Amino acid sequence: MRLLVNCPSGESRLLQVDDSATVKELKQELQELEGIPTGQQVLCFAGKDLKDHLTLADHELQEYTLSDEVVLYLNKKRAHPKHIYLVARSRPHQKVAEIVESDMPVGDVMALLVSRGLAEAFPPGTPIFCKRQDGSTVPLKIDPMQSLSNLEGKIKQAESVACTALTFVQAQDGAMHVVLWPSSESSLLTYPVYSRDILPQKLMPKKDAGTGQPFNELVHELCILP
Image (cartoon, one colour):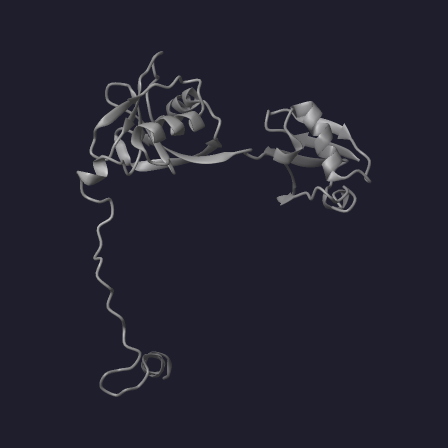
């Protein structure tokens, strides 16, 4: 079977593989060619993922293709995915969600801000600050080559709070601000993020006070029946 595999690198690999080979064996061959671990590979055909334990013949690939070559698409899964948010200084309430690797360097996050059009180019040696809810900032001694996991450790050490979601924005002076809510200090000095009545909510009675008829029967009688 002739396979044309479109890879994330932009290259297309033309392979000659036996029908009895499993998808796992095909991924092992692609690992040698593309350097992507088999556990992070996702092979797709006609919008469906191929199962590792099945053979290529089991998927009946040739029955659903009109050419001599079966076209597959190779995608790479995140080994340790992490959700972050990017924000433009001019639109602070519009967050762009991104899924990145937890070991992604902080400098790559800064480059991602620029590539998304959310920030201007960061000059070398740009300072990085942790921004609290009250607007105060705490300088972080971290190198741009260090990972997001190290950044979270620095913030936890400075703020005594575990990081669940980080938001990155370029400040007016060009520095990088890592927005963290809530802060161990600022939460005592500012209003809460969410404001709602803490009293017990009113309960809807199960029966109409006048007739004693259950509400579900009353609604059915008034709104559904002719």
